[in-house]
Length: 100
Image: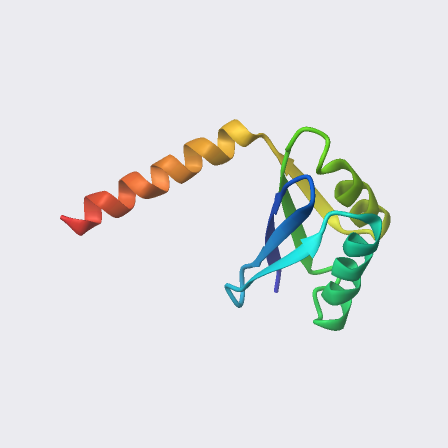
């Protein structure tokens, strides 16, 4: 089974949304915070062989997480923010269609 984790990154921290449990957890966007996140993944059975990480490209804020996660052998997808913006608008449009 594949696990998917969507990550929203800012200068000071990042939020990780776990597909299987729907929880969103916050981590510091520092080397220590990223290493804590990677350790959290291993402790909770989100191994590099069964987990994909999706990061929105946010200036340079995503680079350290992307680098450290790749070094830990995780598959990392860096996503263009225009794509995530279009996708979120499409999701809202679909929700509004089904409301009426």
